[in-house]
Image (cartoon, rainbow, N blue to C red; front, side, top):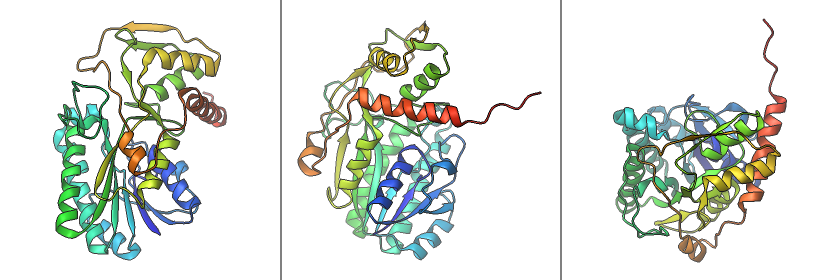
Length: 317
């Protein structure tokens, strides 16, 4: 198959590209390598065709016309909750207007299906756990709103244009290639701090929990969705809640270092816990998470350790 992956130089997208190519597909990556987006040339698979382009660019239609992808895997996004809150128009411009440009281009090119990276952020403040696909979506951030809106547009494009789709609502994805800077996941941030011998900040009491799912498991969910899950949405997580304190302990074990802890109050709007019930994905996609936290953490630490060792030494004055 011919597959276009938007955001394919980023954390999750680049792992998807690797897997699609390993499965014998032809892959084209569209990524603007935005500084705040995590896309890097070093993440690109050597056998992937790369187009350095923003998804809002009208030229996306030309690329799709030339490639004529069977599948579009849409991971390009403005993913920072903080940036989206400061500038909702920018968030909507990328995540909604840019998304519509991708969908229109896919329809014009005769694309069969779109796989969309949705998010737990579409749920907002939950009142019942575990969360499944039927839980009310009450997003509290422009980022979560734009992800929810995209799901509605996918249904419209399927009914109006016959463009099939599968939407995957990810939990907290972690693993190699995640950017430890800016608004990255706590595992990537902590990992960089532990390996640098630095202290970490623990907000609240550290007992707040999320559903942390390893990037390799997310890749397998996307591989399954290439041929399954027509017109459906799935939560993608482990079905387990993991606290920040548990993450700290797992990293201490993986690195052999107990980072000094600075305590901080609860961040405004920080939810106490959320975790998924991924039974529907197991039933219909034949998918469930396989990588436990200890194994995933070891893989993540190994990546960051190797990256740190291969980084060029700072130039002397």
